[in-house]
Image 1 (cartoon, rainbow, N blue to C red):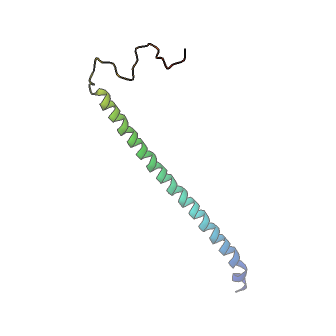
Image 2 (cartoon, one colour):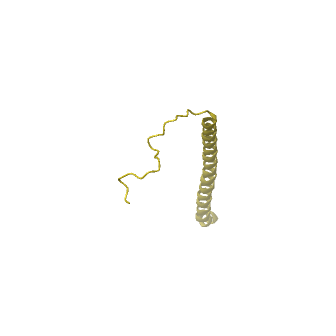
Image 3 (cartoon, rainbow, N blue to C red):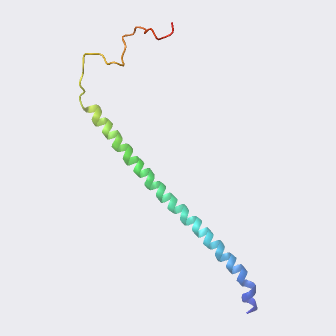
Length: 82
């Protein structure tokens, strides 16, 4: 019984240490899995966005002969400093 009284604090501290390390390692592996899942989702979204851009670029656009309002003819406007 005396051996148990002597060894009990060391055993408790050892079990506590094991539990804390186990929790740290488990949370690290969970974080790695979640980060892998996040990056996989980001790759999927990027691929979908790239495909949508390619499809939009492949479609013919309407061409108007009138210049757009935001385009200018190269002349300076009066509100610009000279």
